[in-house]
Length: 165
Image 1 (cartoon, rainbow, N blue to C red):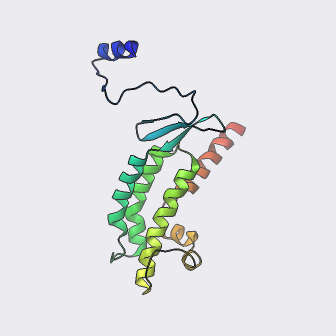
Image 2 (cartoon, helix red, strand yellow):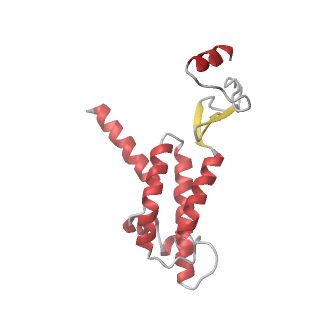
Image 3 (tube, rainbow, N blue to C red):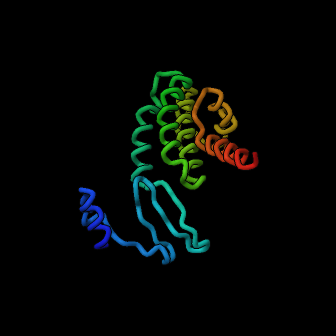
């Protein structure tokens, strides 16, 4: 820690005394938060994995919620177009997280959109159950909604293809 303080002082930087700590990642279930990510060592696998920090997830949801109010008078395609740059930016920053985190964000956004559609159809409550058959994921893709899970799959496929070339 002393070496790090000395190096940062030479660079004209100062470590925050309450935010800076040493974490022994050799311990099971050890974790730390850094730049919007949560780095965590699993109990069974022992690998260090990246997750989206809960505070970052909350901030993303607070950004999306005003755009997906159930009483929104805009068309679904207009809402999808408003969401697209935000979801794309979120993906570009957090694309190195575990896939389940991105799937969860996709699911949450589609639940919000299905709730709008339920309201417009005169139904109450959240979009779940049969709503997945009424408005499948492909419906939102056809509207132009950015899909984080598909973007990750395409990126991984292109990386595999580049290596196999």
